[in-house]
Image (cartoon, rainbow, N blue to C red; front, side):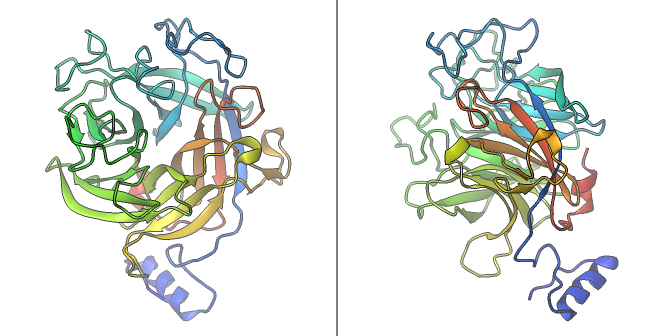
Length: 401
């Protein structure tokens, strides 16, 4: 069994784990029991940014799950990334809008700020910032002359924040890395992933696309020292093995990819990842999901992925730490029964609250998804789960923001 080298108490724990059969650190443990639901809150599907612009004009007028477009204001929906703030609030990333480039030109890209109230099970909308390009850093034409960014310009799906308060956001249309200041202004030209082109990439010219639509940077982790980003593709690059996803390394100071990459192998080629965040310099939490919802939802899992590759097969080692379709709920949190499920098509947000506790949020694809109740658009649900064991996370990750 491998042993992670640590200082102080960590050495004693790792040594004890090696010496005593059946005792293992979080990095070595191969099986984890069920996670437990601790808290539940939900933001209603029909929540809109007050006093904002109309949206949804390209969705058509046929009702979807009982909801008819267009909307008088911008929907607060589609959470595809989450960041924890020091005051108990969270920044959440609304993705490209309504599902694709063609129907999302009137959806303004935005970071929302929310605050869960777990007593009554509600979520407060506390404001947010629109993402803009006032200094014309984007080298291709944008949808709007005022350079407010829309879902027809970028499909933003992952987010991290550095110590200076700026945001790095992963896009799927390039795929690109986008760097914004704390007011949501783009700081530099979009950074492409060398050699990889989605169909929507405006700079590929006659170069064939080698990545499918909506399969770009769905997850993005930041190293505990804040120097490195690890964007994870949602889909397989043409020519790679089926279900193999590229996990790249990006040096923030150099503003360039290092050329190092690893492979995350999906349980099934038809699956997708939903998010990826760092636990320490070698380990990451990754959400993996199938495309089902409601009764057809089967695979909604959180893995602990380790890039040290103990099997020496070129892949991240995976350990299941939480099955989101089988969460223990002995206290009947949220009014649900003793077995809680998170049966949504897209689950795209995980954040570490402490060494044994995670917050997980869904992307409700408003108004299209109806995983909780057939025919009713999904709310944005915010759950807190307790893992079976500690993660043994890097203390810098636990203290971050």
